[in-house]
Length: 278
Image 1 (cartoon, rainbow, N blue to C red):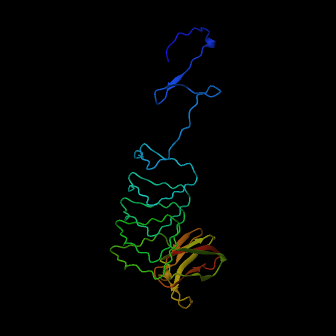
Image 2 (cartoon, helix red, strand yellow; image 1 turned 45 degrees about the vertical axis):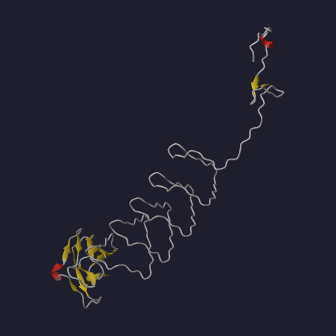
């Protein structure tokens, strides 16, 4: 508006009027409400069809969904091919259920693909499961559980070959027993053991008394006194002075082994231990 000279020189009484032009070039006063606030007409936001924005970029753009549950319904949804190099899918739920019919994905490759299962227990039920032949060169199976139980019926594997196959024995079944004799004055045979299925075994004898003790091993094909004989002959007997110890191992193999002792008529006290593994 024109800059006319203001004759009222009292600052508190000075007033100004604001005008503007409409779309037709007509000067009109700016509209205010009863409180002097500028009035603006209603704003209309039109619904959009075929909304087109620039392509989103994982480097600069992100979408955050704050709802605890999101449902997406889509028909004919088409997105670009996902790439393991640049794309990822994160599922935060503790349980994920996928229902699919005629699911078809590209063949997986051990060089570029991997499947990670974080559950402590996985159950797989399959009928007529058919996979390609596994190869020791490119395939591997890792079992993290401390106990694995395999139940199979009509289990059939290829014939094993000493040239390509091996069995690693990680442990052996161990057995032990012992007995003690106190102040015995005779001679006799005690502590019969069935040693037929043990690959290694021994008898440990400790003379805890104050008199000399003589011990030896006897072997037999059956547990009958008439069949027992000294392993290595009577000369294989060992004399143990008070406080001495010895380990007796049979030189010949028969089903039963026992300990023979002779006190020479003196009161003898001793203990004997039997150790063996399959």
